[in-house]
Length: 216
Image 1 (tube, helix red, strand yellow):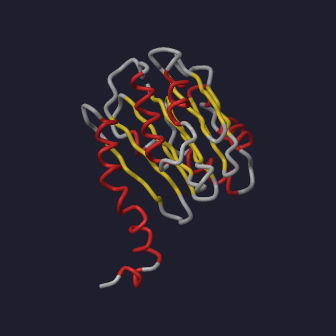
Image 2 (cartoon, helix red, strand yellow):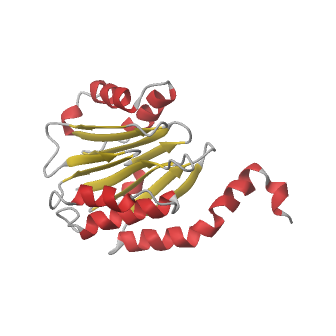
């Protein structure tokens, strides 16, 4: 009952995960990203421990495929897990355990992976990748657009209630980390939050790394 987009921006090198589900607070469990390393989504019977473990594997030099293989091998409950990874080179990989409920699947393109379970139909994931596209819009805008395309194509079996986006870029802290924990229209609310936050995204980074440059 979750669908997510994991992606790397070829223009900026930003890495991120955008996700939505019919459960509460999806942002606390599914999306993980680290600048210059990669991004991981862990979902279905979600084990949030797999996110940091996946980033550590990527940081050690593992590719996306090697990371997914190691994550699946590291958990005795792999049959319940669904995992997606995009590495810093834009390579993608995924894993579906044998007990992941249908419809489930993944669709890949260069630098992007759409991943979902308990989906309404087989059109959801292709619609997400197509909507993500290859234009020069900010990565966050493209990812939220992709989630909306997935919902418009049918989404999941239940009504979505939460959504989140996490993007890493250059620094050890997130460039974007926005969450809608419970809302009747979580994707519209996530888009509203991003559009309100976007003008300050770069400024907030500067405040952290070069506060003197901001002025009094």
